[in-house]
Image 1 (cartoon, one colour):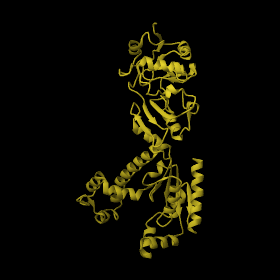
Image 2 (cartoon, rainbow, N blue to C red):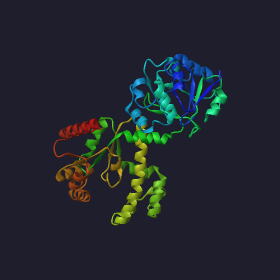
Image 3 (cartoon, rainbow, N blue to C red):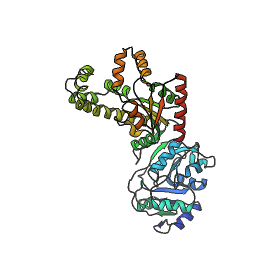
Image 4 (cartoon, rainbow, N blue to C red):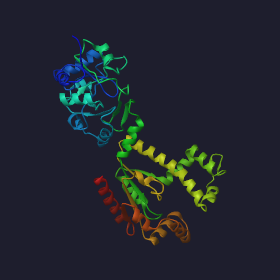
Length: 402
């Protein structure tokens, strides 16, 4: 048998696939050895031709995200987000398989990987054949993955029925594989798509609620309500103070900008305060440093939480907008309260005098600032239990709309 090369008319190649034959196909990574993924006999031929161990499952090539609901159960919303962003492209997503997927494809397991290749000829072949392709790389097991049709021909001439010649593959190495069939999500193979890009996309898909407002307004109660709904709570002040203890690069940059405020690895806060709090330009310089490091840490925590299957986060910051955190929030919520109630709460909480509590409030934004800039307002002027109910009502509405 002479293996046939297809360059233009793909209809005959599609008929070969439908008849249970094998056809090598190009992708943006490497060439794949394709057969009807719903035909156990065709899949068995793939294992035989490659010399692939039967304990290694095969992924299915599909034409687009709509295939997720055809071949998979319990599709995570996060998987849909990755497919929307990266398909067609070098990403294989593993999910729970529908019962009718042949056991030989799954190698006895219950999950299946889906991959939508970024190559117009293979996408056209998928459209013509109307079946998913079981398509591992088109090389004998242990050999180099082929980047050209000629290399596939050298490997398998006379053993497979056809090769789609789509030119050389651009990336030259395999797709990245992520297992989303269970939590936490796990990168099983680092391929052409970087892990950082995947984590970033998952974090962008989360619903992030920004909580702001002055001292004594009741932000902590609002945050506890979000936490009870499964949110990751990120307190910018706490993160900054933690970074001062754990991040030497931050301390070094502060010490470079304000010489002498770091001694033996410890920030001298009073010395720094004396430099910045009566000097707007110095304070702006400090904020530009601290906000950048806090921003990077928040991004890291959001990505980690997203890989753990998290879908909701809350960012707590008085300077939510000036600090730049509002840009990553789906919604922003200001917690406001009567001035006198705020004074009483601050005095009781921090054990300070009325005069000092008043000075702290006067140094912060007025209610009108938050009312103009935030998406939603929560008033905390009455009983704690009533405020808790108001918080839960608003947050459930926000999350359901998202």
